[in-house]
Image (cartoon, rainbow, N blue to C red; front, top):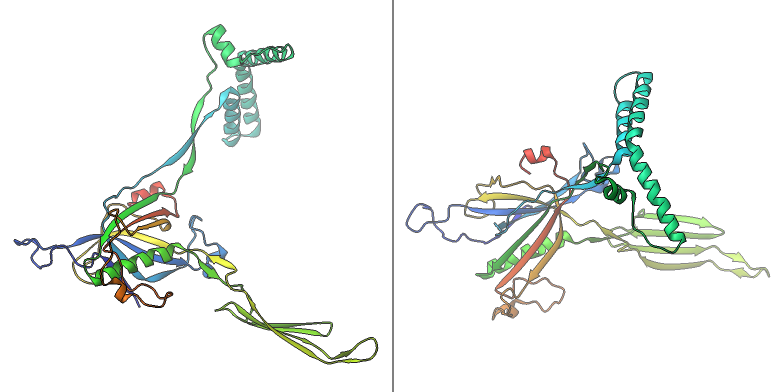
Amino acid sequence: MSSTLKYPTRVPVVGRDEHGVEGATGSVDYLRIRKFNINFDKAPRGYGGANLPGGRQNVDLDPTTAYLAMPANISAAYQSNYSTVDVGQAGVMGLEAAGTMMGEGDSKTKSDSIKESMQVAASSMFPEIAFNKGTDIAASMANLAGLETQLDGKSAMALTKGKIMNPFTEQVFNGVTFRNHSFSWKMFARNYKEGQEILKIIQYIKTGMLPTLGHAEMADSGSSTSGGKTTAWTYNKETGMMNQTITVAASEDENGIAIPESVTKSKRNLSGRFLKTPKRFNLEFVRLEPGNGSTGLRRLPHYRFQPCICSTFNVNYTPDGQYVSFKDAIAKFSQNAQAPLPSMMVPAVQIDVAFAETKIVTAEDAAKGY
């Protein structure tokens, strides 16, 4: 059954006439957060990643959706990674040769063109070769004599000719980074119900970003027999507990004395052998009309999000630098230490959330509003 979490639980000014004297709140903008889980068992071709071209993930959406009033900090950053590369004359010659080989024409024409290019390039590279070799010899002689020099071919040409060889420096594209999104909210519990809602939102996010324990993967039951010993077992996949029975058949020892059949039963705990991948999050800016649920939902075109992971979640229970608690909060606290809190015990918290997208943004995505 689907459910909705929302903060704040009520609009700032209640009323129907948003154009009247009281200025009732007509609608509220929210960041909508919804968890989902990748179903790796149904992943096409066994691949559950997000960036395989043409790939598709099978996901299970969480029945609960959280709406948090628009945070103060909204921004989208785009970054492309480049590195500078000094191609050099030899590199230019190699690139020209590669381009000729990949181009059109027969093999003889390509071969002749490459030879001609190499002959032209060799004459222009001679000064660089001469200066580099000369300074290498000077450095070797200085090393043998116990002297020091930092002179290289480039420096020698600059000092003697007043110029250097063109390094043919290029900016080389190395890919793009995943976008990151950080949001902060200071949340006030104005009544008991809103305190419950805030606590549920905190639980919703932190349980989604953390892994769950996975048990060993085994068949429900099985047995094996070897040398008169039979081992049978049953396995509970829900609890990770295995019941094992080892039966040793009756036999005789070397003196002919009978050894009766023996049965040994034991339990083995195979739980928690794996950490299952945490859930991921769909984020979207939306506008809702006042009321419960998601009445009048409209999407806001600020920018769109790729599916995200939650990398950081901080909850500050003393956002004003001093501890304050509700007077009657402890009265509603269960004596069962394992039971979840029914509501917040402090009047305000600040939450800071950091999301990282799991798919890169391409030019095609940007044109669609990402």
